[in-house]
Amino acid sequence: MTISERISAIRQPEQDAPTCCLCGAQAKAPKAHPDKPFRRLKDGSLAAPMGWKKTADNMRCRDCTRANYITRSVRVRLIGAESGNADEWAVIRKSLNANSALVAKFANWYLQRLLAADLAMQPFEGKLPACPEVDYYADARRLFPTINPQGLGQAARTVRAYYADRRFAVLVAKNRNVDTYRWDGLPIPVHVQSWSLVAEEDRGIILRIGGEAGGSWRVKIYADGINLTRVHQLMSGEAEAGAASFIRRARPPREGEAKGQRRKRSWYLRIAGRFPKPTAKRKRLATKVLTLGHDKECLLYGVTDHDGDEPVEIHAADLRSMICGHRRRDRKRQVDCSTIYRAMPRRKAKRWAAARTVLAAKHQAKVTQVLKEVASHVAWKCERLGVDEVNYDPTDRGWIDGFPFHRLKSALANALEGRGIAFHSTGDDSSPAEAEGDE
Ligand SMILES: [Zn+2]
Image (cartoon, rainbow, N blue to C red; front, top):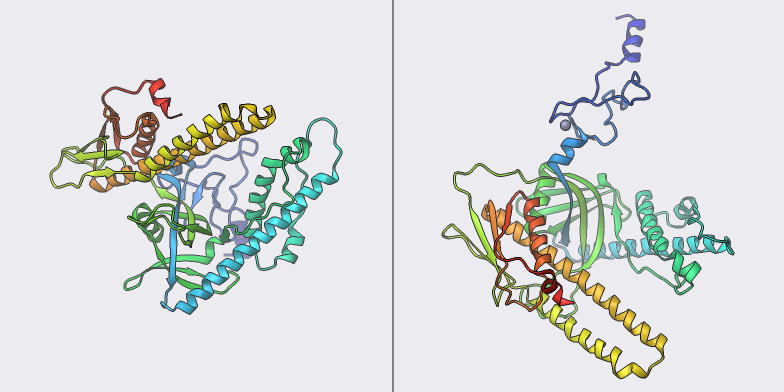
C-alpha cells in the first residue's frame, strides 16, 4: 500500500452509520448536514450518537434502551473493611466523614457566594432577575483541592437548586435567611471508573474504591432483596452503572426493634444505573394468580393459587401508628386553632393554621412514600413467587377507617405493572368522599 493510499484510507473512513445491536436500526445523519460523516472516537470506532448508548462491543438506539432498561438506583451498606480489621474500618469511616464534611464546607462556601452575587445586584426593579452566574470553579479547586472535579460539579448543582428554591423568599419576600444555613454533610460523588464490585467466594461482595482522595480501599458490603438482585446485575454486566456517591443514612429498623429509638447512621454507596426491564411474561402453561386483600391485622394479605407458597403479609404497624399519631395530633391542633386560641391575634392564628397545613402535607408525603415502598415490596415478593397475575379485592376496609386505599391501589398497580405482572382490581371501588376521609 502506498503512502497516498494509506492517507486516503484514513481520510475516508467507512461511511457506515452506527447500527443498533438490538433492532438493527441505523442512526440518521442530522438533517442540516446529511453528508457529514458520523463522529468517530480516537480508536477509529464510531461514537454513539445523541441518546444512543455504547457498550464495549456494540451500540443501542434510544428506543431500544427505553424499551429494555429502566433507570433505578441501588443502595448498598458498607459493613467493614475486607480484612475484618476494626482499625482499618475506623480509618475508612473517618475518611468518609472528613470527605463529606469537606463537600459540605464547599457547599456552604458556594451558597454564600451565590447570595453575595445576588445582593450585589440590589436594588433591582420589577421582576426578580435570573440567578447570577457565579464562577466558582477555579477558586473552589484552589480552596478544596481534594474534592474531585466531578464532586464539585455535583455539589454545586445541589446548592444551586437549594438556593434557587429560596431566592424569592430571601430577596423579595424577605421572610427567609440563607446566610446562616449550613450543611453538615453531603453525598460524596465517586467517579464511575474508581469503583467496582467484586464477589469473593468466602467474603461476600467487596467494593473496591481506588483513586479517590483517601487512597484505595476494599470494603465489605451488605445488600438484600431487590438491591442484591441489582448488585448482581451490575456485576454480571446485565446492568450499566451510572453516577455513584457515598451517602450517610440511618439504618432501616430491624424487625422487633423499638420504634422511635435513635438508630445509628451508616455509610452507603448509592449507585444509579440502567437495569434490564423484567422480561414480560415467562411462558408458563398455567398462570399463577395471587389474591390480595386487606384484613383487620394486615394492611395487605395475599395467597397464591398454588399449594406450598408462603402467604404475602404486610402488617405495616409503623404506618398504622404513624397515621393514628398524626390524626391525634392534628385533632389537637385543630382544637387549639379554633377554640382555645380564638382570642389570639389574627396574624398569629393564621400562622398556626398555616403550620397545621404544612404538617398535614408533610404527613401525606410520608404516607405516599411508605405506600410506594409497600407496593414495591409486594411486587418484589410476587416476582419471587413467580406470580403472573394479581387480583386485588379492596372490599374489607377494617385496617384503619378512612385509610387512602385508592392510593395504595394505584401504587400497587404501578409497581406490579412495572414488573410485568398483571393487576386487576375486583370488588367495589372506594367513593372519593370516603377515600379522602383520612384528611
Ligand atoms: Zn434499536
